[in-house]
Amino acid sequence: MFHEYRDLMAELKHSDAHFAKLFDEHNELDEKITNLEKDPIASHRHDEIDELKKQKLHLKDEIGKILESKK
Image (cartoon, rainbow, N blue to C red; front, side, top):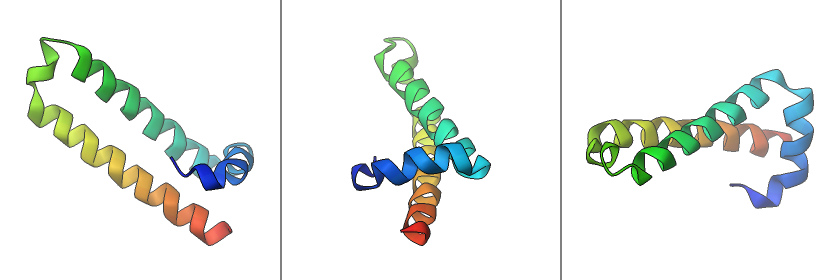
């Protein structure tokens, strides 16, 4: 995610609490989605997975806006 902003993201994770929170929430959702998709029982819960993906995309958009404003 946003590889071209790797240095800026590292800086913001340490200096901007809001950015760090968004970044952590995004990563937690990513891990949760991955685990649900790998689970043969949970993988049938498409509605829940789709909702989590929407939340993750929203966080990614917010992170992107912050990165664009700081470059």
